[in-house]
Length: 139
Image 1 (tube, rainbow, N blue to C red):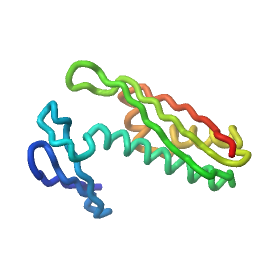
Image 2 (cartoon, one colour):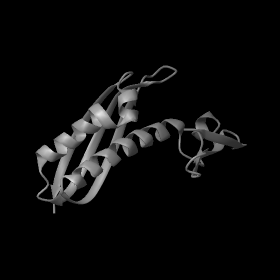
Image 3 (spheres, rainbow, N blue to C red):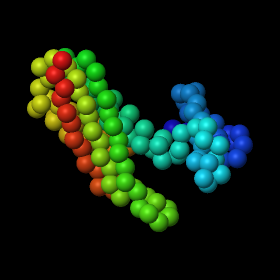
Image 4 (cartoon, helix red, strand yellow):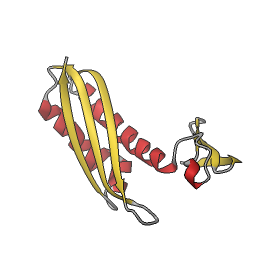
């Protein structure tokens, strides 16, 4: 995998995945010199984590023929107060809406993502406590 970031102005960059050819603006808060015209770098890390595990979980639930009508992954992080302000805790919440969704299927899908499939989660959990939770919302 390779990405490139082109500087635009201030602390604003346009980042691009060189294999996917998709791009995103990356910036900082105005309090530290940013122009507030893009996602923060650590938001991108959290989005990558959520996307990685979310793709695993929905794929597994679909293979298990669960009737999921909506699915959301929320990633909440806590960071140290001092620089480099690394994450000290991560909570991944899976909100699954559907008809008769089986809790055991959800738990197994999350466990497989956590332990086997999601490289982002497996990499991050070497450095920070990553916890998961889920809620099944009946239709």
